[in-house]
Image (cartoon, rainbow over all chains, first blue to last red; front, top):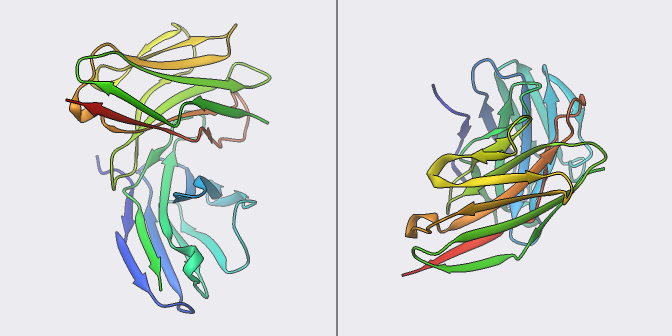
Length: 113
Length: 115
């Protein structure tokens, strides 16, 4: 079975540009989590969805960040406009509700210059 | 709210020596417990988990962890370190039975293995 798929794997953009990160869940999973990892702050939960519904977005840094689940297997995380401090590795993870464990994608390394 | 404490941000062991990574949690009820490993430039990979039943849990790559309720601990061990074990390790907990499926992660422990 394919794991969590993220694209792109690397993104370099200039400050002020819009960035869209994409994630495909493991088939059959119904919970989706977006994380950000930096050296300074470690692993931070940004937002998570259950059955396509956003449950907790308290970790989203500011209004420049938005996330959607247009269908049960796909999610996007958008940053508009991007800033250098958004540079990080962004992970998505999926899980089967009730199972507890989350399965992580390979991450998108974002660099904003 | 749960919290996870990993004692020691860096651990250095010799190849063939015991690996011991410490994890303590605070939770009002026995939680689900997890250990994840992250190799450089990769995502987190599940090593093992405890949900219920036997308190000694075996995972991949020869790792195991023991849930000790009285000590609120879930320490990770491997009897003999291999060079390929060099990575960052994260302990995580989630509420048992709650509708909130967030994981609370520890800060991570980086393991280096000396030849």
